[in-house]
View 1 (cartoon, rainbow, N blue to C red):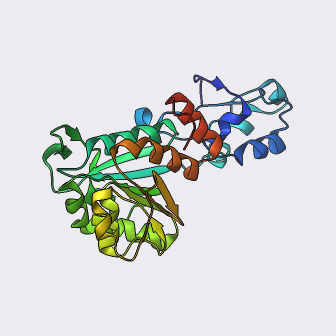
View 2: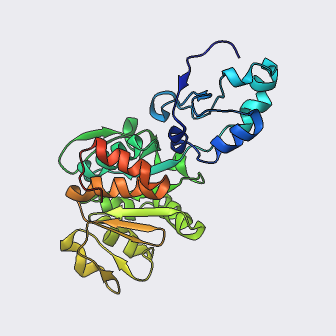
View 3: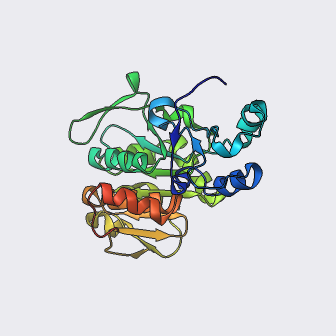
Length: 268
């Protein structure tokens, strides 16, 4: 494979990728200490690369290099990068969309911002006039798999998401597959409730949209988790929602680390 930059990390860092990887490495290759190994963890937003590469350590001197670094060996330690989709449209709430993307990225989650509405260069004008360039058009996400799909609010952005057949299909698939999906601000009412995507029981949204949430056990809470559906109230609760999604997608320890870095005390 040639030389590469190696980061030697504490065992806890494996939780960023796959907690099950570490024991498999120890068993197969006989690592003796938690600093006997290293891996390359590439930022999904910088390099679009999420593969673990096991690096030579003192415990591996007896192994042939090709045994460790063969292509099959590398593939064995490849892992699924946790992914999130955030659809955005003209009139979407910028604080919510960008905050969710930021917090999820801090959690090691690969975030895709998908624009709705056949936008030139994937640029949308958000609810307060801020222009945001998405990564892809929503049509490019059709049929793809994500670990979470979460809709920001803002008007008329939420209505544009509601009217997008691609967004609705992706949300329906998340619900059917038991995978995480959610919405914040106006979107729980305007998008999820409108398409029957809120599960029975508790949910929340921006308070002025409560009247639209018929048949829902409305909660005046920052974040509500109901099965695989997560709802939140608005711009001021977006950071808490992001941290909760990191907890649900990764683990509480990772969420706590993200919350600490954001000076969220206590963690939601």
